[in-house]
Image 1 (spheres, protein in one colour):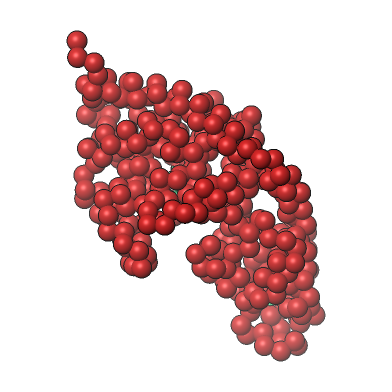
Image 2 (image 1 turned 30 degrees about the horizontal axis):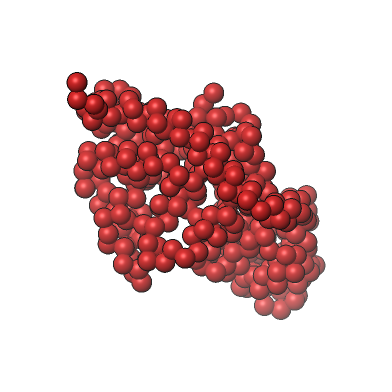
Length: 328
Ligand code: TRP
Ligand code: SF4
């Protein structure tokens, strides 16, 4: 059985972008592959080491969202990165052999330095982000890594690091491949990519009321000013979401929009209903799970045990190959 691994930084509640982009992919994979899904809390520290107060809550929210969405700890191993200390040890060894130039030319690193200029992230930990990510993947011999397109440079670095290890210490680590989701780009309420940090996200846990409010504020076709102006669905973020959440009616909506038969208010009401309905099961399950105290802690504890068996085995071999082993 092929081994799958992916991680999420704990940023709190998941939104529709996660669902279409990656969660659905993970759900599909859990029944047919040996899946490792983990919460990357050390990675959260690379940018937010100065403000860790919410970390525990964020982790709990995220695991509850995973479970309510259908990830099943009987089928996949769900754990928290920091519960598996071998990952940090492998990251240390990999850091020894990773040229600084590989990290400095990483496009994500360069972008983030500019984008997050309100945070002091010109740190050792932040530039080492991809080394830690490589350790996450390589320590379980992850072969398939479901991620979004933004993670491709990191995956490439993981492969380069694995190759360098194998060149130095003999073939052992597995080069991972990214698996991109088939899902379309999910626009947020302002038509930029949906993201918590842009404040444009619809969360899986939003109530029908909150969903309606957010959808009502969504950006539509800017050329459609009056009710009887014909619309251009292809530039409209509401329509982009209809394609995902109202698939049976998209053609009718597009036609009626183009001839100004349907107005944006009605079109948005329809979308809010579609989104709410598609989250109805999730909402019910999420409420039940949240009412079981200790559930997340228990799942993470079990997951860490299972992951630990694999990571300890890998590290024994890694140490031997690097000659970090008992003196004879
Ligand atoms: N970098 C990923 C993100 O920002 C999170 C992550 C950490 C990850 N380690 C990983 C993803 C290993 C896949 C595999 O979303
Ligand atoms: Fe967008 Fe719908 Fe308005 Fe057309 S009718 S512009 S698809 S919100």
